[in-house]
Amino acid sequence: LYQVFKEIFMEDVYDINDLVTSLPANPVIIDIGANAGFFDIILLSKIKNARILAFEPLPQNVGYIEKLMETSDLVKKSMTIYGKAVTGKEQGDLKLYMANSEDNQVVASVFDGFNKDNTREISVPSITYTDIVTKNKLEKIDLLKMDCEGSEYDIIYNTAPAILQRANHIALEVHDLDKEKNNYSSLNIYLESLGYKVTGAAINEFCFAVNAIKKK
Image 1 (cartoon, rainbow, N blue to C red):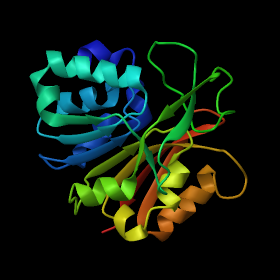
Image 2 (tube, rainbow, N blue to C red):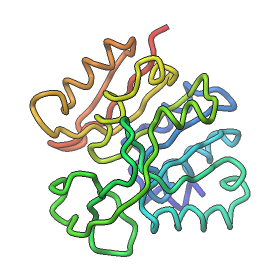
Image 3 (cartoon, rainbow, N blue to C red):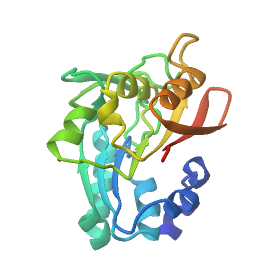
Image 4 (cartoon, rainbow, N blue to C red):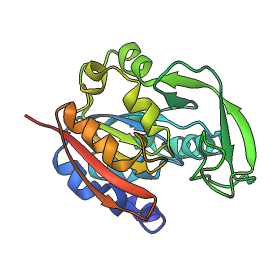
């Protein structure tokens, strides 16, 4: 599986080789913005006993993952896919803006101006991050991965610190949306205030790859 997706997924965005060195043999992972499952497939090629709760709001992307489950016993055993967007505050159904295509979607967002190609509007169900953690009785999350095109701020700022801090490692893409609090620098400061050591690197002028690891 790893060889199939190696060429089409930017593995270095999350530095999976480095991520897996810090994970236990049986990690619990929450993937917010699973897309077509590329990250999870590569991770499972390296840690086969992971338990992955994956959240992806776009039906066509969920369909890709479900097809993978049909063809891979490892993916079927290790991964549970939920066709929902994740939020910080309770919001019910959400409007998402995406490209007007049935192909794999990578930049759908709750913000209509997030990407110039996002001309199609759809409604999707949502679930709060708090509900994910509490309803699954997760006292510890080994890795929280987020790639949700601007929704990272709602999730992180509007989740109680005690719930967020159950994640030992947060790996996410951060997008500069404004100069107030929805930006790379402000989010880093907030995560550091919660007891995380934060490192990051620019992917482009608008997006950053961030790793936040809970200090011991």
